[in-house]
Amino acid sequence: MALSFQTGPRTSSKVSIRILTILLLMLSALRSANSQTSTPATLSEQYTTQERVQRSKWWPTSGKAARSDYAGADTCGECHDLFLKGQAQHLMARTSASASTSQILRSHIAMPFRVNGYDYQITGDSGNSLQYEVKESGKKTNGPLTWAFGAGKVGQSYLSKEGESYREIRFSYFSSLNEFDVTPNQFLQTVPTIEKAAGRLLSEAEARRCFGCHTTASTVGNNFDPTNAVPGVSCEGCHGPGAKHVSEMKAGNLESALAAITNPGKLKPVDAVDFCGACHTTWWDAKEIGANGIANVRFQPYRLENSRCWSRGDARLACFACHDPHQPLVKEAGYYDSKCLNCHADRGTAKTQAQKLSGCPVATKDCVTCHMKKYEVPTMHFKYTDHRIGIAKADAGFPE
Image (cartoon, rainbow, N blue to C red; front, side):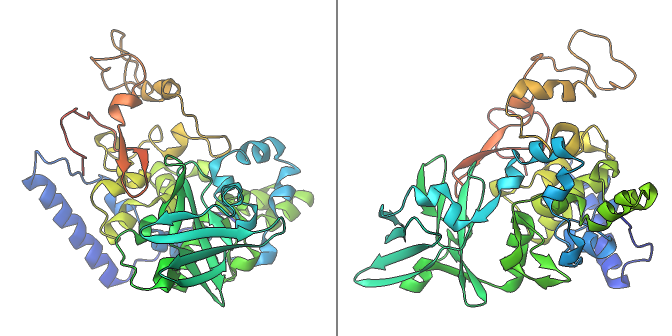
């Protein structure tokens, strides 16, 4: 579907709250000239994901469309085969799976492990059913392992379907440890009972958010329907339901076909960053949840828009400028040098008209290793690249 923002004003209360918040943030920045805290110049153009969903015909995590509106990735591949094959290698395509297909879980069947004072074990057979079991002081409880969330780069967490609800299992797998530890969301929670040691029951709203970013079409017609969700983020997870696009293309109605699908690459920078922020956390989403401390390094859109580089928004800084969602993430630091040199002149060379900023006086390559430091989030056991681009001094703490 074509992207269409409502032109009507927000409710007066929301407008007032936003204006007051912006003024307070600007005042705070003026009072703390030496502070590392920054406020994006594009703040009034940015929105929470909930607001984006309400204002758009299509936005990631929306859930408005009917299941019949989806065509399926294989249908997309009939015309976009190279995009489909490339995207299948991206971590987004593998960010969820049926627990029974998780190689991590299957490689740990009947191998007891201990987490936070409790003994756990994965049980199952060569069939499609896996279960978790937790024991402590002669007490025991168990349940099915239904979904595995996470491609394994950082790790993998698990959900158990219990009746109409989902339980977030208390143990997760962490790649850097090559073992299980406490699920980050439950790290600070006490476990006074064996049931608590199994995990925590999710509200429907929480479960919707989990499935909304880890699967495709888990909410359809505004009804939560995870049983029929497509594992991973497929083509339609970002481009929106494609059935009408396909039918219009087959009918030869090119204009209608293009209007029936979303092309995120055509969004202006501030909208594009919020688009990715639907799952990676927008600036306003981070503020709404009170994100602070080193854990917010995970929120790349929020961090990017806190950079001095962001200024009023520039397509050369939007997510798509560095990352191709149809290809695996590039890990080599040198690959990103050309992206930096779109804005910064190389040291010792004359600036072009587009390169309005000077080059780095220290180095000529691997820019991101200095200007996008990695910080470890203790509960995640993983070092994330900080997208708050800047000059990171060795003795400085984490820049808020």
